[in-house]
Length: 197
Image 1 (tube, rainbow, N blue to C red):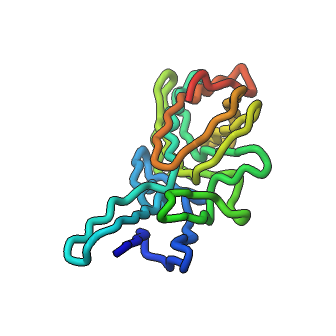
Image 2: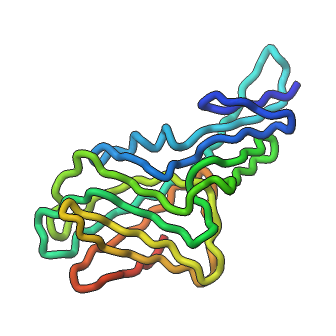
């Protein structure tokens, strides 16, 4: 027998695929908690077994970005209100995805979005030199050679700080990975770059 599963529950089509939302164009984080990620990272699984002993190993669908935002400004009371992630036009990073459960392929549909806005609820002041961690769940995606991701940090006074990560050789962002980067906020530059991801 073959068994297929999706969590949270949804319909599985005759071709053993399902359409589920991975990540979201609008996400909300409570303080420094990463708890919201679980609801944005559906699970799926497949196994061949006898009906008497069914155990289905489950896989993650989302790419999780751990963004350590470092305050290098003179503002000792910086409060981060939003973190925006924008991919190049046509690169879908959040929303409906088609999941081939047996083959293990997760692919965003054309209805997905190429940007994510994470709102921080109840964030504390980030003193100068300190770091605040934002967590973003995205659908798996690929940045082509020479492409980039734009991160925009918005503070409580609506000041925006852009951080750009370029990928000269391109990059695949795969399901089930936690990727971390440090985003440095500086007053003297409109945009800074991420050294590594």
